[in-house]
Length: 314
Image (cartoon, rainbow, N blue to C red; front, side):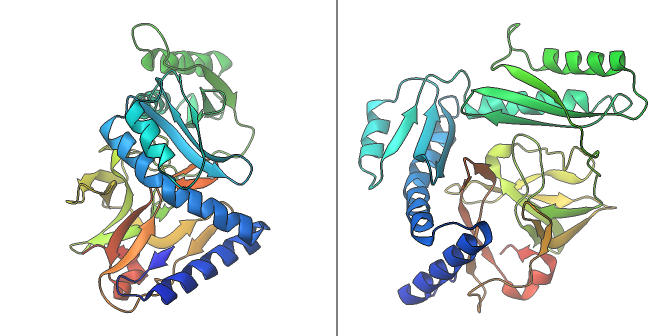
């Protein structure tokens, strides 16, 4: 949801109503149920983000779905402090505890797997790693390079598994899955909503000091591969506010940032900032999709006049 910082309560409520109505129509979802789910996300986000930032070894994932309600996954048993925080929320939260690895370890593991594979483009053309909180396992999806031998591909995958081990063990089980689809094409144009390594995706493209770039979450790591390519994005610039989980990456020479966003089906052009009329508009962004809900929701200030180049940071 996008809100103007000086909008009235009525204007914000109307903006929320329009946003939820648009999503319900696009996905054939009941508006009333979607509103309940949105409320659960709003209430749970603060607790989960705080836990992730302060204790990434304990926090694993959180999410909300229409079917299962609000859930949070952690490694050890929930502390009395966490139980107290969750009990204070106006929604019921299911806590899955006893997971084998926390969010930071999973991010490091995913980066090790994909980074190792992509160092051998002659055998594997593309790869991506994703953690499944239900099975507490990770899937490494890969696309063999044209004319690569089975032995070469197997050797590259074995190297990747070895690179992700800690003290001789993988933090969580890994399933190797060969994709039968077309090999992903690396883009010269950076867009929002695309894979950025570390189980993260890019957010809105944004300009800073005249340089084009893209936003993502601070916890995603300082160096990211855009769609598997390490030559596209410069190291992160972390926004000075430590109450948010946002960083910005400049797009390197030879690549461009587009005011468009991959919406799950295709690239959708961003033409305006909703409810925006003045500088300082707050724009809500999300860095990951978890159990059907956006996590790591943050707000940044934007200049609507520069939306043709994405969102401009101030």
